[in-house]
Image 1 (spheres, rainbow, N blue to C red):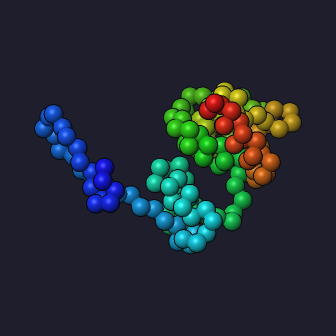
Image 2 (spheres, one colour):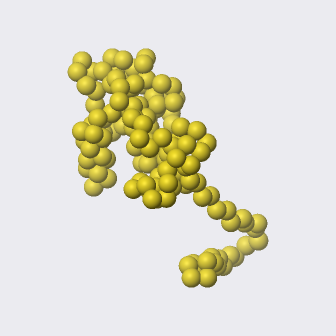
Length: 142
């Protein structure tokens, strides 16, 4: 790769067709001067974050525990498995789109419930919960 010439050279031993694509995602409500603009752009390109619509991210909106769990699962590259159960007392309240992420992170020991084995998927995540989740992920990756 020659970044100064913005080229990529590949030597192949077979005949095939290849394409080079560029995916550049920006959210209209996240100015380039926003402290998280670059990180959000990278995470959007990697399909970790999608935003609240095609062109909006809502950077100042609260995030639910279910949403936070899905973001972490995507960042870890975990695959969706609709046949898993998170085994929380309130599992029926976990949105369908979050069930496999919640179950996977619970099985990995990254997330736990609150009192009485409840996950509270629609509750807003606190900063303390986000920090603990990030620390658990770091510990898993060691």
